[in-house]
Length: 292
Image (cartoon, rainbow, N blue to C red; front, side):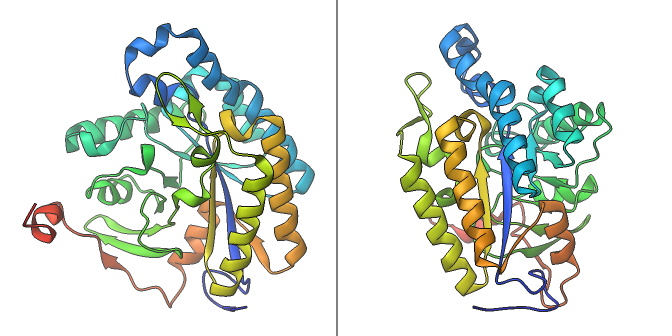
């Protein structure tokens, strides 16, 4: 196992971040306003804030572990009691866009407006988020600049590493906390006939085994176990028990440190071994891929 006494891992072989994207109806409505008339689809998503989040909070309390909840602005407005439950439980709440529309398809002005609306929605609860995760993990090249400009400390959307790194922007430095699709419950459990958000219902036992394997591999490589779950998926009883098994296995290893994303970002920003560099400029796509 690899250890860093003074770096972002703070002596652990691996750092685990448990994150929950409380999307609720937002990704379905982002696919088309017409889906608001589909009662099955809407209630399928509403299970997350209504049932999934309370169950997840109880499980986290049982195991005494911290988590970060990324909540879109529209979800916060629609389910204020759920937001208050997360706050009362002492977990971090972070920025996850307002409407769950991808920034890739927005102008920068539209992205800024959506970003600002989400801040206002969370601000009504007294929340000043420390970090951001792009809807669908699809930021634009300008998103880190927006994150820094609004005073947030981290982003969790990019996938070119499996350890934290620093991005230098004209508005300041932000920590990037990379996620990955293999550590996302959406790719394991998401199924809906319309809109087609996925077509798989994997066994929770298989998923737990896969994620425990990932933890052990990351302990060897000194990596970040950035787990992303959605309460409308992992909030289902059998899946939640699989997640409990994963967390318990990590705790049994004795060298895995659990952290909120905000605390992890602070550790990364204070790590003298991490050197900040610029993300590709706004014109990156044209400069890097001139033949396309």
